[in-house]
Length: 306
Ligand code: 6CS
Ligand code: FE
Image (cartoon, rainbow, N blue to C red; front, side, top):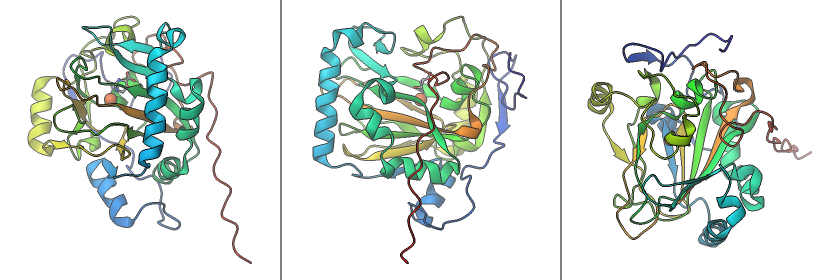
């Protein structure tokens, strides 16, 4: 059990809990040398997410997709626990820890176009808590039910507070038909404590279809009425930055068009994971960085022109 105070109790509770967020969304205190505009920062702070259209070029996306195809043929990779198939087929659902196991994507993880914004928002040195490719293949890509990533990372990985964010790089066009991420804008400011003890090795099931750690329907109804629903549909090459506690989910993909996205989760070094707050043994390294912890190198400070 963690010796850290549990600011966000979840799982071992009798009733759902709505807890106001303790941490700021934007952890910095200046816009000097900001990599995004004040309007963009305001939008991220207010809504809990920011869409950056066409941040990566089509030729970069083409290179990423070629890497995806190669991974889908890599028998050794497919045999590891980091490769997760869909609940009702052998289609590939996710591949985790690509920031360490894939040369190209380990570079993308440190790309200043996303890492600099994450560092600005979290206002700390960073490391990658988790990375993954979600394939959401045509016809077989099943939904990701409503959830807060932080609820899982807090309960099952021991992430103390809300000082982490995800950068999702869209590798295919995300549309309202093929399962673009849906978000509840503003929901990042309230934590839902979920009822239901975490089974041992729950990740073997949750990565295919999560139930434990997802909110009850009454809380979701309250949230939907309070925050509404918004689609983050955008073209391939766009980047969606979203706060660790934003309520989000995506529908099953019954179209022929895959909805494949690359995710990097940036966590503040000061918010390194500790013992899981649900009291279970920690999840494996491919889901939550512990032994392979290494801070992202901050860029050399801009030398002032003399
Ligand atoms: O368990 C996790 O860490 C993963 N589960 C979901 C549904 N989203 C975040 C993360 O990839
Ligand atoms: Fe998620």
